[in-house]
Image (cartoon, rainbow, N blue to C red; front, side):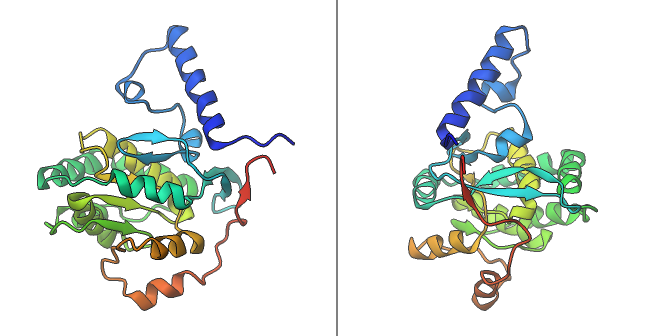
Length: 242
């Protein structure tokens, strides 16, 4: 079976998007920002340096909803993906945090729909806004463990003030993509907020090996270490085309 790399997939997606525009499709602001067409396609990308990019790695992790129905796949970040995101990290001012908070507030219906599509029912996402509303000192680093939504909001606010890499758990992949679409529309500095799929034991080992700071926001080191031993309900990663 033919093995297709992440870059090959992204080239096909971008070409299809451009063809649609030439056929009379409207060029929306998101397309002008190099967005790609659907949530399923965005799942195959990482958001780094202010735009959606083809991953360097090729291991695909299949996603399913609460009933076990397939939703698509994410490409799990490798060493080169983490290094690229680390090199793109850039700080944002506190006004950027407030812009993101307002965008999340306005975008709650889309966030609820994304969460519900993968994990029903959706929790109270107002807690995410409460966390973002709390002023935080700049804290560059990585979020790579599941957090309560209020703590996640606080960690996102602190992280983007110093430059952030967010590796959400696979069960929050669609929600994370929806949130990054909102973040892309509030003029954050490129690299202030980067999204890499996904928080897996392999990802956490790479983060530790590279010496990247982990933003725990209330989760201590022992809890984080324990998370690496919890089996996921998703199949193990596989190579594209296998």
